[in-house]
Image (cartoon, rainbow, N blue to C red; front, side, top):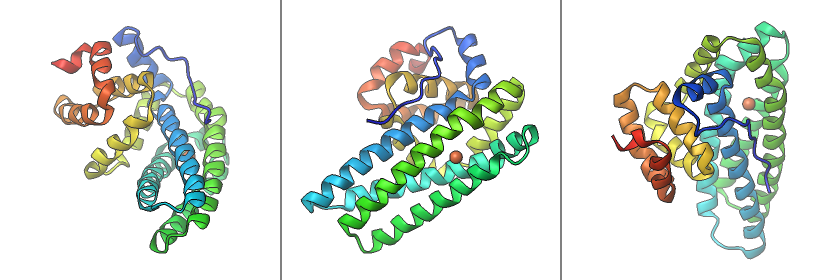
Length: 233
Ligand SMILES: [Fe+2]
């Protein structure tokens, strides 16, 4: 099983306390790493199973394509906002994470090549390596990169970093991103993301996002509306 990150943010607390914490801890982005962890764990488990069974690989390859897209947003967001901010505080630190990202690019490109000529064993080998690399990369960012920002930057600076990172998801891809993210999160993380988006997005934009959340959260939607009554407005 994958290890999820729990920052100890109580998403059911008062609204003002929560708002302060999501900016203070860059929580939205750390929460999304739980989705990456769950996704690649499930993908790798399924790839291993398909290598044994020889069943149809197309749904798995489609899922890998979406993961590749979202990993690209992760890399672009961090390289535009997080890495420069960290390097200002502690020079040279981000270069190691930049190298990790290029290796992730190579892996995703390799999976695209596999997609053109699917082979179960080659896919399983590729997903195993991707899972290992991605898990270690995210763990290092969680224990090293993000604490530097959390401890040594202001709330305002963290909010501006969050906005730059969010801008790296193309607007036309936001539905794909939401449909990827929500099913991979536990309820508490879904509440965190929903409240965060409510705080960050202009009301008309959140009105559209709310419909995507409703569709993507599926059976958890009722629980979300219980925890966040504003969703029913
Ligand atoms: Fe990263």
